[in-house]
Amino acid sequence: MEKSPLGAAAVKKSDLTQRKSVGARKPSVVSAGALAVAIMSASAAAAAGAEMSATDTAQVATTQVMANTSPRSATSSANQVLVERRTPSYWRVTFNNPPFNIFGPETIPQLDTVVTAIENDPNLRVVVFDSAVPGFFLTHYDFVPPLSDSTGLPSGPTGLHPLPDMLVRLSRAPVVSISLIRGRATGVGSELALASDMRFASREKAILSQWEVGAALVPGGGPMARLPRLMGRGRALEILLSADDIDGDLAERYGYVNRSLPDDQLDGFVNALAMRISTFDGKAIADTKRLVDFASLPSDPEIAAGWDAFITSVQRPEAQAKITQLMKLGLQTNGEIERKLGHYTETLTQD
Image 1 (spheres, rainbow, N blue to C red):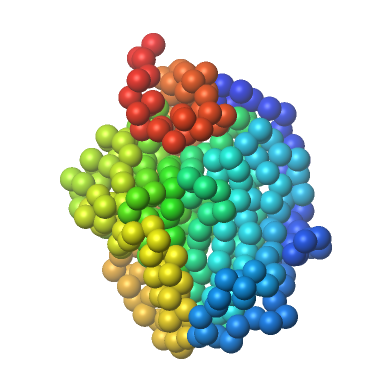
Image 2: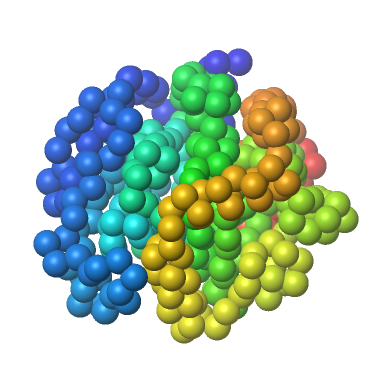
């Protein structure tokens, strides 16, 4: 079992003991046990509550959170998660793993560092997740590393595997999380958006998808637990079992996202909302969110069941055959396949 690759191409497993480093242009190294990210403040950071101009934004120092390991697939980059501190109370977290923003086991320690920082910064009120890769918000799990690279990772603080652990912790953090979706949010991207407190999508450019059933997989990041709470059982099953692409307008009608907006209005709307929330009292935000969580969040066992089902499903011959077909078509290498994944999963044979 531990030797099974997630997909058709397995690569050599690297040391799971990973050191995390942070900084602006030249990250400084901290120990793997560090519980917070050292985030560099811009020398001329705008005051809390002030709208930032394009020039201001360009002056803000960007933290590159990285795991000190070699990329394990052709789709991986060393610095996949960028943190921009716009004000002490408002951060941007940007996914930057071109060409397709694929999420893999090497991404996990990078995002975990950020989630830990979000949980522990007393000044932070709101964080916005977005993408630096045109056409892709965040996509599916990486099918190149061997399965052991994922199953061998230690559990997170909740006791869950670190991927669902991070999503659960993000939902429960005393900080408001917002996903700004421009491009494709597929698999893990959809699941991170669902774990966020709010989701706003580009009307013209957003595509959301839980594509896994089309490849004989079970989604692993909790959408079976989260989607029915957002849109009802029937629509949740339609999203999951059709494994098809959902555009911004339909996502809004179904409750997949809060709103879809014209693409040229999306950034301004999300930034204004985030800045507004960031000026409010942190204790009032945290307590209000905590009480909403009681009524709306799935339990840890519900989330754990989804991840366990994913790991089981990926080892089935049917899933291995379909992933092999997709890899031969160009999954993770061909932009056409990644952009139209819903279409190409429909073309897979049953062999």
